[in-house]
Length: 166
Image (tube, rainbow, N blue to C red; front, side, top):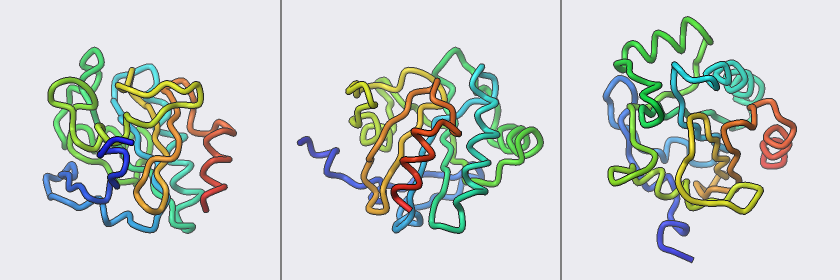
């Protein structure tokens, strides 16, 4: 087991879209679905499903958390204000969104160093391959499941995994 796989995401601080630094420990005791998001991607309509999960389970200590990323064909070119406006107007997003970050490569954010160690259901770990990869994090801040981009938020595998933790 490597050092980061023992690490909780709650040990990290990240800036929200408004620039205010926030500790991930605000989610301690909650089940978190962490997702790298983008506004100009073929998977962008998944925002609707993510918001539906947020609405459905928020009162059961669950939260979707979005991390905009511009590393995949520059599909998240907007400013923080543009991202917030796009998500609010087009998808009614109320879940927390953070400042853009790198999910892979030499400037990979420490959050994604932790998340990407987790394997998907096919047993593959490593770099995020595209926008809208989803990581299910338990109440203790440790990654429990990974779902690739093509797995939509309303997929029974995701819903079942969430419900099993609530």
